[in-house]
Length: 245
Image (tube, rainbow, N blue to C red; front, top):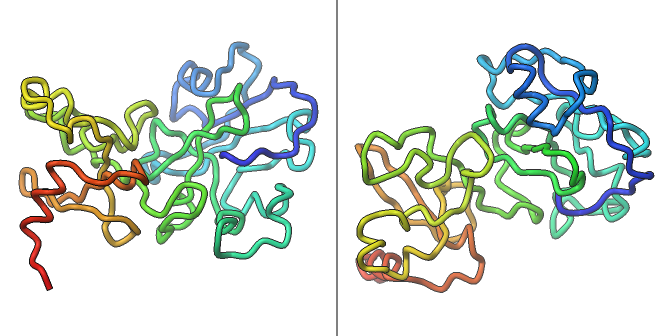
């Protein structure tokens, strides 16, 4: 997460995540573990809930205030971060009051974010895993990229990650999803160079546009990826078709 915690002297040595549902090597790779003793299994059933909270043991030498930070659903930041003291549940510090937990990005199919607090650790968190009605906050924005529900990849027109993958790390969220297309490669339309992602229009505070593919109606947004976005040929076409009041 983007706001820094109060840390003790850095000494990273014990990181733990889920149990044998995920191979040991994958677990070790996920959290940068190099020693066979630097883990402890905690059972997680990803079949029942791909976005289950996982357990990450942050040593008190790293985070002296709360070793259980991020484990299980809670408003973990409220009692840990100085800026959250006396914060309101609305406004720029609204995230202090939102519940979240650590998740496995290789399984979690909800909006998920890499933590910036522990640079040596490749750990991810999600608000949606704790609150299905979560519609964003000042930290992650109010229009989350929702992923493509693994609905692409069967045609040459769209990659498996088109619109933002639902799981994984590098292919989540905003991207230049149209850039590899033949039209973009040959014509170089301005829209090819504007990042976008699929969003839920009912939980998005910026403009989104409908697009149907193989009978599925998606909504995509450029503004969710770039707050200063001011239009391209795609949005101009949509807006020219919109009725005027």
